[in-house]
Length: 304
Picture 1 (cartoon, rainbow, N blue to C red):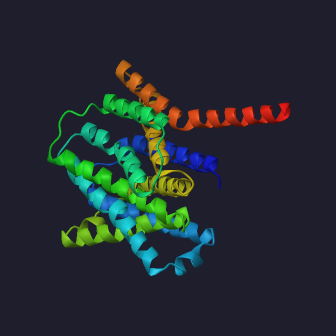
Picture 2: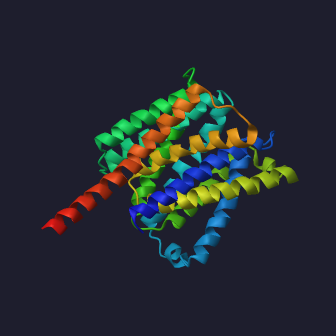
Picture 3: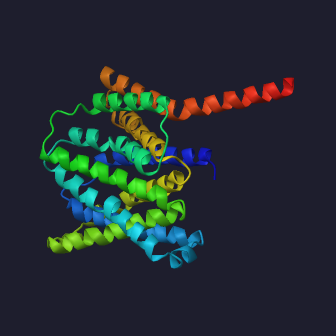
C-alpha cells in the first residue's frame, strides 16, 4: 500500500469523524459517559475481531510476542481508556468550546513526539500549515479560560498523541486492524476495571432500548474511524496523518449548515478557510510539487 492510499484512508477517517461529531448532537442525554464509552469500545472490539477473521489475520494474533502484547496493551491504556476517562470527567467541569480547542491540539503533540521518538522530519511548509491549523482552531473554538479541567483535557490530548506514536512504531510489524482491535479491546478492559472500582458497573445494564440504538450507531462510526485511521497511519508519517484529521471540523460545520440550517459566521468561515489551507499545504502542495518534479524529470529525459 502506498502513501497515496494511506492518505485516502486518513481522509476517510476525517470524514467519518466529522459525521460522527455531527451525529452526536442528537445523542440521548442522561447516559453515564463512562459506561457509554465502555459499551462503544466493547462493541467496536467485536466488530474489529470479526474484521480480523474476515481478513484471515487471526494467525497474526496467535503469533504475537510478549513484547508486542505489552505494546498493544499500552496502546489500549494510553489511547483507549485513561484519556477518555479524563476527557469525559473534564467535560463536566468546562465548556465544550474549551474542550474542542484543546482536543484538536493532538496534531501538535503528535508532531513533536514524531520528531523526538520516530525521527520524522518536518518541513518548513508543514510548520506554516501548522500555524494555519492552530489559528483556524483558535478562531473556531475561542478558548475562554484555562484551569484544572482544561489541564485534564490537555493531558488527555497528549496521551492520545503518545498512543499514536507507539501505534506508529508497532504498525511497522503489525496490521492496522490488529492495532485498532488492541486499542479498543484493552481499552474496554481497563475502563471496565475503572467502573468496577468506582461501583458503576450496574449503569451498563441500565441503558434503555433507545440508548442501545445510539450505542450501535456511534460504535459503527468508531469502528470506521479506528479501522481506517490505523490502516492509513501504517503508511503515513504520524505528523501528517494527525493533521489531516482536522478536516473533520469543516465537515461537521458543513453538515450542520445543510441539515440543521446553522449559519456560518464570517469568523467561522475564515477559520475554516485557514484549516483547509493548512491541510492543502500538508497534503495537496506536496502532491503537486512531486508531480511537477516528476514531469520536469520526464521532460528533461525526453530532451536528453
